[in-house]
Length: 160
Length: 296
Image 1 (cartoon, helix red, strand yellow):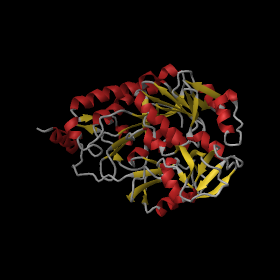
Image 2 (cartoon, chains in turn yellow, cyan):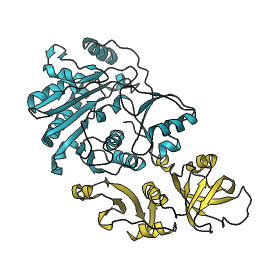
Image 3 (spheres, chains in turn green, purple):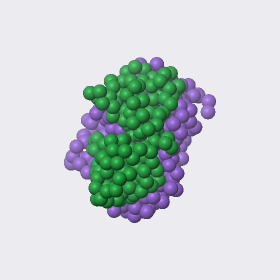
Image 4 (cartoon, chains in turn purple, red):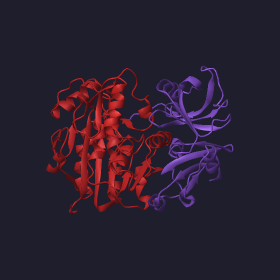
């Protein structure tokens, strides 16, 4: 639970999560609703809303959790243009010229959610240089840490 | 006689003349996550041409796309799923699934689980089972991508569902099957009648377990993507006679199932099931079952 709280705090915000509804299974955390909580048994594989996993003491968030954080108005966010959106979801970093707007921290080292022009969360990254400074437009300013293209990279699709 | 000729003769005796199917890729909008009209507009702005599929809600054929529809932002955000058109039918056949306790007995890779969650508006509980652990990962990724919040997944053989000690209002039994030639170019070279008979036995065991965990007023939707009557009409005829189940009439795509299989006369109510011969869709079979005497 602490891993989740610490991770959320990196974006300059917090989430109210009911700890009694969070279950852990082999380092993976899931948020249940009361009805699921009543029905679940301990040998489940996946349940409710997947929040993320801890591996070698590092927390890897799910995209559900990132979406929940992105709903907080004050959270650090970097809005990018359409072309940059396409590049970001194939794993690329963000150049200054692709940024439309920054909300929250602009400081070097800060974590920022990356959102498109529909305000939809595409992943998150780390600010490499203070965004308030002047830079070359072709300079990488946000390092891609995780993006939704990961769903494609995780596996080859199986037929239904 | 070649394997292909053997199976084509069987289809002919069931009343269908072989023709090559032209399958079209299909998607289904996850209306829990997005406004349908908005997603259609966004996809069209990406030069993806869509056509509504008349027999399933929120479903579209992909008529033209300059790139894979599995690589758009909208797909990755879970706004739609790629799901073969006939495979979208079973989850639409439950009456009033919202708030119910639902079993998806053979769930991976999860297209129908997501569809169920969408039709339930993430209310109630879906218990999703699959025997193949590798496919559970695919199922979990699908649930995460599509923001499903009401499912619990177990690594479990559907034949052991009673170990959960839960009675279900709705059971989706999309049974493991022999598949069909329209979805697999090598099908005729791969399949034998022994495969069909083995799958039919497995399916009977799963149907029997499903009947055990079904509430008295519950519903089972049984489906396969095979054309072989042993896995379809003959299994349902067996379920009617041995499990106190009855079929219910369902409207929609496809035709009445056959009640005379290679000279064997089946219960007349098997005709309530739908048989879909390949054309725009793959081959498919679907029916809705209830306990005999249950009150609707």
